[in-house]
Length: 367
Image (tube, rainbow, N blue to C red; front, side, top):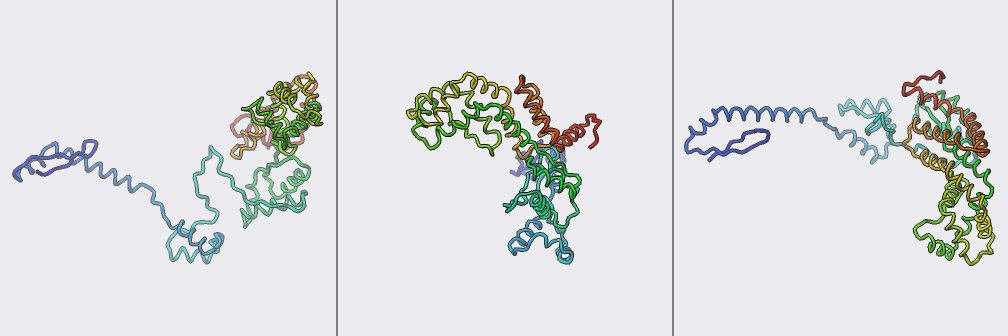
């Protein structure tokens, strides 16, 4: 009993009952069999066409890369015209360039960043910084000629860095030097200067639980699910405001913990108890939490490496709007500091104009 295949959306095996050859011949000539045979041939052609149109990946580039690495031959040797012509003539293959990037390039998302160079400088001044940046970019472009492709220098706002940025602008004419996270940190430093009593509390609170397991045990008895207070460090941006926010959240519990400690005569503990007993400190902590905690969140957001220029500018714009809403005399002081920082940060003003122009919005300024 022979079997035939008919295709009705999928391959189906159909058994044909027969005792003689003419029965098979009769089935083959039926309209049903011819119709299924036609569909089957069309599907096979489509599958064959789909297979042919799939990109055929060549392993030549991968094998060439592995061979050069195994032989300890640098990739830039492929730029030698004699060596390159030799490979092309005898392999009949396209020889890849050392600068070829492998991966998906999406204009909507930022590509993966790469670290080109990292070095510990013996002296830190505008001259050594400028030389280091210039030498590092020569690693990326050994032949030069790509100075116009350097677009942004993002750094802090130290005076020697500002001077280095002006020096590098001579060699990289399209480069914009911006300082965003450090500008916000300067605002946080101004907040610390305005609240002396809160600064006394924050600076002494970190000493209370440092290398003191018995005090930590008392802390965990009162607040078992709350981690220890953040440790404010001047060189770690935003940590002072973060600690002040912690004190505002756990003000009453901190008072209870400090009162339970046995060694109350310790200077740091006594200072913390005195500060927590002041009603003005509690109101100052609440004010800092309400109006200045955005500085901490903005600094952390700006630390993300995948941010676009428009996203970074928007984060800073949100900080500017929030600082403009701070009431009272403290608000005027922080606003004056903010406008002073913006005026000095020329690169940020240029970046704002660019982010306004790119989406197609009207702008009377020229960049």
